[in-house]
Image (cartoon, rainbow, N blue to C red; front, side, top):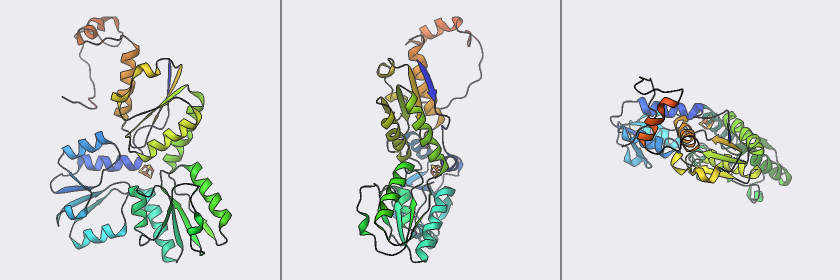
Length: 312
Ligand code: SF4
């Protein structure tokens, strides 16, 4: 069996900055507004440090520190924090911030704001908060675009939206509009790169493993793209979800990861597959007994290693 791993893996720039901040910041009286990323293992690591995750700003006391995740928030959150002396540590990704700026400026010019994305996704909710929550939000090309008022409109996309679907929505929208439609392609380069790679890889593999938190929007989009080209796509949130017997019959297996999937999680999946394919050793005694036959390790040898995660 041959494994091909997509080149773009691990945290994207925006997620890395947010996670690094949450893992290094002073934890006393520190809160995070929502899950820092859609990845349960990472969220757990951060809350275990003592940082409190809240979904409601009423739960953040005056004078506390509040981390804003990479998805960003609406204008009202900044105003509320200022009024209650809450110090903001702003990890809004620069690409999201750019979209927020477009929404704010275009709304101020009197244009109708259209956001293409998932209605309940925190980034979309935050973007809507920069145009008085008056945006029209569309998630699919089949929606009724005639509900839009007949005035100039500006269209932006959720940064992790599917490029292909975005193009279809623009086309359908342009077909029924007489007024000017100004399009801002705000899908971020990381998303586009990963989607293109997933598309290519899934065309040449017999099976694909898509690794990342099950509630991660960008990882789920990668799954959808792969599923169009390949009949055997498996969605894993971690190594625990991998059942080797389901993939052992395939010759070429591709591995695709979301922008919020830590490298360590991908590594765990690879290690598990390696263990299954190699010795099939299940006990520590067998592993130790086999050590001398392996070129990498010898019994009694001191090795230097990095612990990427640990449990009981
Ligand atoms: S996916 Fe793109 S927009 Fe979202 S955090 Fe990563 S770099 Fe920023």
